[in-house]
Image (cartoon, rainbow, N blue to C red; front, side):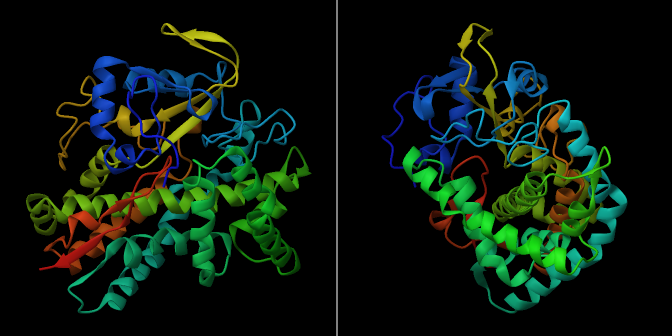
Length: 403
Protein backbone atom coordinates (compact mmCIF):
# COMPACT_ATOMS: atom_id res chain seq x y z
CA UNK A 1 0.00 0.00 0.00
CA UNK A 2 2.63 2.53 1.09
CA UNK A 3 4.47 4.79 -1.36
CA UNK A 4 7.12 5.61 1.23
CA UNK A 5 10.69 4.33 1.33
CA UNK A 6 11.15 1.10 3.30
CA UNK A 7 12.05 1.37 6.96
CA UNK A 8 15.72 0.68 7.68
CA UNK A 9 15.81 1.34 11.43
CA UNK A 10 12.66 0.84 13.49
CA UNK A 11 14.05 2.80 16.45
CA UNK A 12 14.21 6.13 14.62
CA UNK A 13 12.34 5.70 11.32
CA UNK A 14 9.33 3.44 11.97
CA UNK A 15 6.24 3.46 9.76
CA UNK A 16 3.06 1.54 10.60
CA UNK A 17 2.22 1.29 6.88
CA UNK A 18 5.53 -0.39 5.99
CA UNK A 19 4.83 -3.81 4.37
CA UNK A 20 6.85 -5.64 7.05
CA UNK A 21 4.83 -4.04 9.85
CA UNK A 22 1.57 -4.79 8.04
CA UNK A 23 2.51 -8.44 7.49
CA UNK A 24 3.89 -9.17 10.99
CA UNK A 25 4.43 -6.37 13.53
CA UNK A 26 5.12 -8.63 16.53
CA UNK A 27 8.90 -9.11 15.98
CA UNK A 28 9.24 -5.35 15.47
CA UNK A 29 7.60 -4.59 18.81
CA UNK A 30 9.69 -7.25 20.53
CA UNK A 31 12.88 -5.75 19.13
CA UNK A 32 11.87 -2.24 20.18
CA UNK A 33 10.95 -3.37 23.70
CA UNK A 34 14.54 -4.50 24.16
CA UNK A 35 16.33 -1.73 22.27
CA UNK A 36 14.15 1.38 22.33
CA UNK A 37 10.86 1.19 24.25
CA UNK A 38 9.83 4.66 23.01
CA UNK A 39 10.75 4.88 19.33
CA UNK A 40 10.60 8.03 17.21
CA UNK A 41 10.15 8.71 13.51
CA UNK A 42 10.23 11.89 11.45
CA UNK A 43 7.53 10.40 9.22
CA UNK A 44 4.09 11.99 9.33
CA UNK A 45 5.71 15.15 10.64
CA UNK A 46 7.02 13.49 13.79
CA UNK A 47 5.61 10.42 15.56
CA UNK A 48 6.40 8.57 18.81
CA UNK A 49 5.82 4.89 19.56
CA UNK A 50 5.89 3.47 23.13
CA UNK A 51 5.75 -0.33 23.09
CA UNK A 52 5.91 -1.32 26.78
CA UNK A 53 2.63 -1.87 28.61
CA UNK A 54 3.50 0.59 31.39
CA UNK A 55 4.25 3.39 28.90
CA UNK A 56 1.16 2.71 26.79
CA UNK A 57 -0.98 2.78 29.94
CA UNK A 58 0.70 5.97 31.15
CA UNK A 59 -0.15 7.77 27.91
CA UNK A 60 -3.69 6.40 27.81
CA UNK A 61 -4.46 7.76 31.29
CA UNK A 62 -2.70 11.12 30.75
CA UNK A 63 -5.22 13.61 29.35
CA UNK A 64 -3.08 16.60 30.37
CA UNK A 65 -0.15 15.98 28.04
CA UNK A 66 -2.00 14.08 25.29
CA UNK A 67 -5.12 15.12 23.43
CA UNK A 68 -7.51 12.84 21.56
CA UNK A 69 -8.61 15.55 19.12
CA UNK A 70 -7.36 13.36 16.29
CA UNK A 71 -6.78 9.62 16.65
CA UNK A 72 -5.65 8.56 13.15
CA UNK A 73 -2.06 9.38 12.20
CA UNK A 74 -1.71 10.90 8.74
CA UNK A 75 0.07 13.76 7.01
CA UNK A 76 -2.85 16.04 7.87
CA UNK A 77 -2.64 17.53 11.35
CA UNK A 78 -5.79 19.24 12.54
CA UNK A 79 -5.42 22.88 13.47
CA UNK A 80 -7.37 24.61 16.20
CA UNK A 81 -10.01 25.72 13.69
CA UNK A 82 -10.34 22.37 11.91
CA UNK A 83 -12.30 20.50 14.57
CA UNK A 84 -15.48 21.64 16.30
CA UNK A 85 -14.43 22.16 19.93
CA UNK A 86 -15.04 20.56 22.34
CA UNK A 87 -16.72 17.84 20.29
CA UNK A 88 -13.94 16.67 18.02
CA UNK A 89 -14.55 15.00 14.68
CA UNK A 90 -15.93 11.70 16.08
CA UNK A 91 -17.21 12.04 19.66
CA UNK A 92 -16.67 10.68 22.20
CA UNK A 93 -13.41 9.10 20.97
CA UNK A 94 -12.07 12.48 19.80
CA UNK A 95 -13.41 14.46 22.75
CA UNK A 96 -11.21 15.55 25.65
CA UNK A 97 -12.38 16.09 29.22
CA UNK A 98 -14.70 17.41 30.47
CA UNK A 99 -16.93 17.12 27.38
CA UNK A 100 -15.84 13.53 26.80
CA UNK A 101 -17.66 12.26 29.90
CA UNK A 102 -20.94 13.83 28.75
CA UNK A 103 -20.67 12.44 25.23
CA UNK A 104 -19.76 8.96 26.47
CA UNK A 105 -22.48 8.83 29.12
CA UNK A 106 -25.06 9.62 26.46
CA UNK A 107 -24.24 6.39 24.60
CA UNK A 108 -23.80 4.02 27.53
CA UNK A 109 -27.38 2.63 27.53
CA UNK A 110 -27.18 1.70 23.83
CA UNK A 111 -24.03 -0.38 24.47
CA UNK A 112 -24.81 -1.77 27.90
CA UNK A 113 -25.17 -5.51 28.58
CA UNK A 114 -28.97 -5.52 28.33
CA UNK A 115 -29.03 -3.78 24.94
CA UNK A 116 -26.33 -6.06 23.55
CA UNK A 117 -28.10 -9.20 24.77
CA UNK A 118 -31.05 -8.03 22.70
CA UNK A 119 -28.87 -8.07 19.57
CA UNK A 120 -27.48 -11.56 20.16
CA UNK A 121 -30.33 -13.55 18.50
CA UNK A 122 -30.07 -11.39 15.37
CA UNK A 123 -26.28 -11.83 15.31
CA UNK A 124 -26.52 -15.62 15.70
CA UNK A 125 -29.10 -15.85 12.92
CA UNK A 126 -26.90 -13.64 10.75
CA UNK A 127 -23.87 -15.90 11.28
CA UNK A 128 -25.89 -18.99 10.43
CA UNK A 129 -27.26 -17.31 7.33
CA UNK A 130 -23.75 -16.45 6.14
CA UNK A 131 -22.63 -20.03 6.75
CA UNK A 132 -25.68 -21.34 4.87
CA UNK A 133 -24.74 -19.11 1.95
CA UNK A 134 -21.27 -20.65 1.88
CA UNK A 135 -22.99 -24.02 1.68
CA UNK A 136 -20.99 -27.13 0.83
CA UNK A 137 -17.98 -25.36 -0.67
CA UNK A 138 -14.74 -26.66 0.79
CA UNK A 139 -12.61 -23.58 0.01
CA UNK A 140 -13.57 -19.91 0.30
CA UNK A 141 -12.38 -16.58 1.69
CA UNK A 142 -13.60 -16.43 5.29
CA UNK A 143 -12.79 -12.75 5.67
CA UNK A 144 -14.79 -11.67 2.63
CA UNK A 145 -17.66 -14.13 2.98
CA UNK A 146 -18.02 -14.27 6.75
CA UNK A 147 -16.02 -12.00 9.06
CA UNK A 148 -16.59 -8.66 7.36
CA UNK A 149 -20.35 -9.02 7.03
CA UNK A 150 -21.11 -9.67 10.70
CA UNK A 151 -20.22 -6.32 12.31
CA UNK A 152 -21.22 -4.47 9.17
CA UNK A 153 -24.79 -5.71 9.29
CA UNK A 154 -25.07 -5.42 13.07
CA UNK A 155 -23.94 -1.77 13.02
CA UNK A 156 -26.19 -1.02 10.04
CA UNK A 157 -29.10 -2.45 12.00
CA UNK A 158 -28.25 -0.39 15.09
CA UNK A 159 -27.97 2.83 13.09
CA UNK A 160 -30.93 2.09 10.84
CA UNK A 161 -28.80 2.22 7.68
CA UNK A 162 -29.53 0.15 4.54
CA UNK A 163 -27.62 -3.14 4.66
CA UNK A 164 -27.35 -3.05 0.87
CA UNK A 165 -24.89 -0.15 1.30
CA UNK A 166 -22.24 -2.63 2.45
CA UNK A 167 -19.77 -1.84 -0.33
CA UNK A 168 -20.04 1.85 0.48
CA UNK A 169 -19.30 1.17 4.17
CA UNK A 170 -16.15 -0.74 3.21
CA UNK A 171 -15.11 2.10 0.92
CA UNK A 172 -15.40 4.58 3.78
CA UNK A 173 -13.38 2.31 6.08
CA UNK A 174 -10.55 2.17 3.55
CA UNK A 175 -10.77 5.93 3.03
CA UNK A 176 -10.56 6.84 6.72
CA UNK A 177 -8.35 4.09 8.17
CA UNK A 178 -6.23 2.56 5.41
CA UNK A 179 -5.26 5.41 3.06
CA UNK A 180 -3.23 7.12 5.76
CA UNK A 181 0.03 7.00 3.82
CA UNK A 182 -1.37 9.42 1.23
CA UNK A 183 0.31 12.80 0.91
CA UNK A 184 -1.21 15.76 2.74
CA UNK A 185 -2.64 17.00 -0.56
CA UNK A 186 -4.15 13.59 -1.39
CA UNK A 187 -5.55 13.18 2.11
CA UNK A 188 -7.06 16.68 2.06
CA UNK A 189 -8.60 16.00 -1.35
CA UNK A 190 -10.24 12.85 0.01
CA UNK A 191 -11.73 14.83 2.89
CA UNK A 192 -12.83 17.68 0.65
CA UNK A 193 -14.57 15.25 -1.70
CA UNK A 194 -17.19 14.98 1.02
CA UNK A 195 -18.39 11.46 0.18
CA UNK A 196 -18.71 10.38 3.79
CA UNK A 197 -20.39 13.59 4.93
CA UNK A 198 -22.84 13.40 2.04
CA UNK A 199 -23.76 9.82 2.90
CA UNK A 200 -24.28 10.61 6.58
CA UNK A 201 -26.30 13.74 5.78
CA UNK A 202 -28.58 11.67 3.57
CA UNK A 203 -29.22 9.18 6.36
CA UNK A 204 -29.91 12.02 8.79
CA UNK A 205 -32.41 13.57 6.39
CA UNK A 206 -34.20 10.22 6.08
CA UNK A 207 -34.43 9.84 9.83
CA UNK A 208 -35.64 13.40 10.36
CA UNK A 209 -38.45 12.75 7.88
CA UNK A 210 -39.22 9.24 9.18
CA UNK A 211 -38.07 8.76 12.81
CA UNK A 212 -37.67 5.17 13.91
CA UNK A 213 -36.42 3.08 16.82
CA UNK A 214 -32.69 3.10 16.13
CA UNK A 215 -29.50 4.80 17.24
CA UNK A 216 -29.63 7.52 14.58
CA UNK A 217 -33.04 8.74 15.69
CA UNK A 218 -31.87 8.50 19.30
CA UNK A 219 -28.93 10.82 18.53
CA UNK A 220 -31.16 13.27 16.65
CA UNK A 221 -33.57 13.47 19.58
CA UNK A 222 -31.00 13.37 22.41
CA UNK A 223 -30.13 16.38 24.54
CA UNK A 224 -27.17 17.53 26.62
CA UNK A 225 -27.89 20.11 29.30
CA UNK A 226 -31.34 20.60 27.82
CA UNK A 227 -30.06 21.33 24.31
CA UNK A 228 -30.26 19.14 21.21
CA UNK A 229 -26.90 17.74 20.13
CA UNK A 230 -24.89 19.92 17.78
CA UNK A 231 -25.17 18.59 14.18
CA UNK A 232 -21.39 17.94 14.19
CA UNK A 233 -21.86 15.80 17.29
CA UNK A 234 -24.58 13.68 15.67
CA UNK A 235 -22.69 13.30 12.41
CA UNK A 236 -19.38 12.52 14.11
CA UNK A 237 -20.82 9.84 16.38
CA UNK A 238 -22.52 8.15 13.43
CA UNK A 239 -19.21 8.14 11.55
CA UNK A 240 -17.42 6.68 14.58
CA UNK A 241 -19.91 3.82 14.92
CA UNK A 242 -19.98 3.08 11.21
CA UNK A 243 -16.20 3.09 10.71
CA UNK A 244 -14.69 1.92 14.01
CA UNK A 245 -17.57 -0.34 14.97
CA UNK A 246 -17.21 -2.38 11.80
CA UNK A 247 -13.50 -2.63 11.02
CA UNK A 248 -12.35 -3.51 14.53
CA UNK A 249 -14.66 -6.49 15.00
CA UNK A 250 -14.28 -7.64 11.41
CA UNK A 251 -10.52 -7.74 12.07
CA UNK A 252 -10.87 -9.57 15.40
CA UNK A 253 -13.11 -12.29 13.91
CA UNK A 254 -10.77 -12.78 10.97
CA UNK A 255 -7.62 -12.91 13.10
CA UNK A 256 -9.23 -15.46 15.43
CA UNK A 257 -10.16 -17.72 12.52
CA UNK A 258 -6.64 -17.28 11.12
CA UNK A 259 -5.22 -18.50 14.44
CA UNK A 260 -7.61 -21.44 14.79
CA UNK A 261 -6.92 -22.53 11.20
CA UNK A 262 -3.30 -23.10 12.22
CA UNK A 263 -3.82 -24.60 15.70
CA UNK A 264 -5.79 -27.86 15.61
CA UNK A 265 -5.30 -28.37 19.36
CA UNK A 266 -7.22 -25.16 20.11
CA UNK A 267 -9.93 -26.03 17.60
CA UNK A 268 -10.36 -29.46 19.16
CA UNK A 269 -10.64 -28.08 22.69
CA UNK A 270 -13.25 -25.50 21.70
CA UNK A 271 -15.27 -28.05 19.75
CA UNK A 272 -15.18 -30.51 22.64
CA UNK A 273 -15.82 -27.97 25.40
CA UNK A 274 -17.84 -24.90 24.28
CA UNK A 275 -17.71 -23.54 27.84
CA UNK A 276 -14.09 -22.53 27.09
CA UNK A 277 -15.22 -20.05 24.46
CA UNK A 278 -15.56 -16.91 26.67
CA UNK A 279 -12.03 -17.39 28.05
CA UNK A 280 -10.69 -18.17 24.58
CA UNK A 281 -12.28 -15.02 23.19
CA UNK A 282 -10.45 -12.90 25.78
CA UNK A 283 -7.15 -14.57 24.91
CA UNK A 284 -7.66 -14.13 21.19
CA UNK A 285 -8.46 -10.48 21.81
CA UNK A 286 -5.26 -10.12 23.81
CA UNK A 287 -3.05 -11.88 21.30
CA UNK A 288 -4.52 -10.33 18.15
CA UNK A 289 -5.87 -7.01 19.42
CA UNK A 290 -6.72 -5.11 16.25
CA UNK A 291 -6.55 -1.47 17.34
CA UNK A 292 -3.64 0.93 17.62
CA UNK A 293 -5.00 4.30 18.69
CA UNK A 294 -3.23 7.66 18.39
CA UNK A 295 -2.86 10.88 20.34
CA UNK A 296 -1.44 14.33 19.70
CA UNK A 297 1.01 15.80 22.18
CA UNK A 298 -0.86 18.66 23.86
CA UNK A 299 2.19 20.58 25.08
CA UNK A 300 5.96 20.24 25.20
CA UNK A 301 7.20 17.89 27.90
CA UNK A 302 9.71 15.15 28.62
CA UNK A 303 8.38 11.60 28.56
CA UNK A 304 10.95 9.23 30.06
CA UNK A 305 13.80 11.12 28.42
CA UNK A 306 11.95 11.70 25.14
CA UNK A 307 11.53 15.42 24.30
CA UNK A 308 7.97 15.44 22.97
CA UNK A 309 6.77 18.60 21.25
CA UNK A 310 3.28 20.03 20.98
CA UNK A 311 1.62 18.67 17.86
CA UNK A 312 3.72 15.49 17.64
CA UNK A 313 1.78 12.32 16.88
CA UNK A 314 1.97 9.38 19.25
CA UNK A 315 0.83 5.91 18.26
CA UNK A 316 -0.76 4.03 21.15
CA UNK A 317 -0.22 0.34 20.27
CA UNK A 318 -2.51 -1.62 22.56
CA UNK A 319 -1.57 -4.82 20.66
CA UNK A 320 2.08 -4.27 21.62
CA UNK A 321 1.10 -3.70 25.26
CA UNK A 322 -0.76 -7.01 25.16
CA UNK A 323 2.44 -8.80 24.11
CA UNK A 324 4.61 -7.36 26.89
CA UNK A 325 6.21 -10.33 28.75
CA UNK A 326 6.59 -8.21 31.90
CA UNK A 327 2.79 -8.24 32.21
CA UNK A 328 1.65 -11.45 30.50
CA UNK A 329 3.53 -14.74 31.11
CA UNK A 330 4.31 -16.45 27.80
CA UNK A 331 2.95 -13.34 26.09
CA UNK A 332 3.87 -14.61 22.63
CA UNK A 333 1.71 -17.74 23.05
CA UNK A 334 -2.05 -18.05 22.71
CA UNK A 335 -3.29 -19.84 25.84
CA UNK A 336 -7.03 -20.23 25.36
CA UNK A 337 -7.63 -21.02 29.05
CA UNK A 338 -5.45 -18.19 30.37
CA UNK A 339 -7.00 -17.51 33.79
CA UNK A 340 -5.71 -13.97 34.45
CA UNK A 341 -6.04 -11.75 31.42
CA UNK A 342 -6.34 -8.01 32.02
CA UNK A 343 -5.62 -7.20 28.39
CA UNK A 344 -5.81 -3.81 26.71
CA UNK A 345 -7.52 -4.89 23.48
CA UNK A 346 -10.30 -2.37 24.15
CA UNK A 347 -7.92 0.35 25.24
CA UNK A 348 -7.14 1.88 28.61
CA UNK A 349 -8.17 5.06 30.38
CA UNK A 350 -11.21 7.23 29.75
CA UNK A 351 -11.39 6.22 26.08
CA UNK A 352 -11.67 2.50 26.74
CA UNK A 353 -13.88 1.13 23.97
CA UNK A 354 -17.53 1.99 24.52
CA UNK A 355 -18.53 -0.93 22.30
CA UNK A 356 -16.60 -3.67 24.11
CA UNK A 357 -19.78 -5.55 25.07
CA UNK A 358 -20.91 -5.50 21.46
CA UNK A 359 -17.54 -6.60 20.09
CA UNK A 360 -17.27 -9.48 22.57
CA UNK A 361 -20.78 -10.67 21.72
CA UNK A 362 -20.13 -10.55 17.97
CA UNK A 363 -16.76 -12.30 18.23
CA UNK A 364 -18.01 -15.03 20.54
CA UNK A 365 -21.16 -15.65 18.51
CA UNK A 366 -19.22 -15.71 15.24
CA UNK A 367 -16.72 -18.26 16.58
CA UNK A 368 -19.36 -20.43 18.25
CA UNK A 369 -21.39 -20.77 15.10
CA UNK A 370 -18.31 -21.33 12.98
CA UNK A 371 -16.90 -24.09 15.21
CA UNK A 372 -20.27 -25.86 15.33
CA UNK A 373 -20.42 -25.83 11.54
CA UNK A 374 -16.73 -26.32 10.77
CA UNK A 375 -14.78 -27.98 13.62
CA UNK A 376 -11.97 -28.91 11.20
CA UNK A 377 -10.45 -26.32 8.86
CA UNK A 378 -7.06 -25.01 7.78
CA UNK A 379 -5.46 -22.29 5.70
CA UNK A 380 -5.96 -23.00 2.03
CA UNK A 381 -3.01 -20.85 0.96
CA UNK A 382 -1.03 -19.07 3.65
CA UNK A 383 0.76 -16.92 1.07
CA UNK A 384 -2.59 -15.46 0.03
CA UNK A 385 -3.52 -14.13 3.47
CA UNK A 386 -3.33 -10.34 3.37
CA UNK A 387 -3.61 -7.86 6.24
CA UNK A 388 -5.04 -4.38 6.45
CA UNK A 389 -2.65 -1.46 6.75
CA UNK A 390 -3.01 1.42 9.16
CA UNK A 391 -4.11 1.40 12.77
CA UNK A 392 -6.63 -1.45 12.63
CA UNK A 393 -5.03 -4.81 11.83
CA UNK A 394 -6.92 -7.83 10.57
CA UNK A 395 -6.94 -10.21 7.60
CA UNK A 396 -8.50 -8.76 4.47
CA UNK A 397 -8.21 -12.05 2.59
CA UNK A 398 -8.35 -15.34 4.49
CA UNK A 399 -8.56 -18.41 2.21
CA UNK A 400 -9.66 -21.41 4.28
CA UNK A 401 -10.17 -25.08 3.47
CA UNK A 402 -12.82 -27.12 5.27
CA UNK A 403 -11.67 -30.65 6.13
